[in-house]
Length: 105
Image (tube, rainbow, N blue to C red; front, side, top):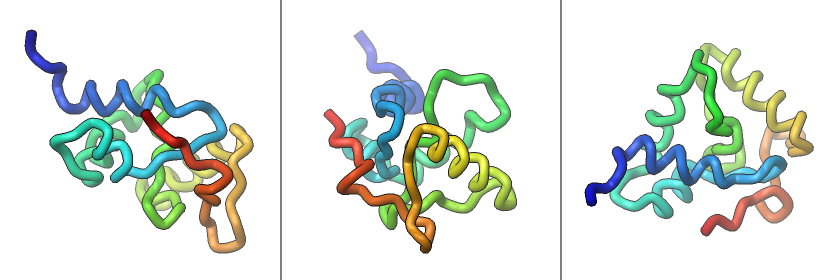
């Protein structure tokens, strides 16, 4: 039996991140295997403007920040969605991985 396409494997892992938790692009890439954090970013970016059950907003960069996208509008939307889930940002716009980080699989 063949393995699902890469983007589908990425989405399957991202769907496992619970509300109020975040993971990094690199963390998702390591779990999926055979891809990079950048590829995870491409997969999630391809969801923009679509109705999806993939909680793309829960994936942030390794610095604990929302990566800039969508001329700044996408970043603001992502931050708002995370705040609605109870995720807090510090004064520099970072998320505390100790408090909000998803341990993964």
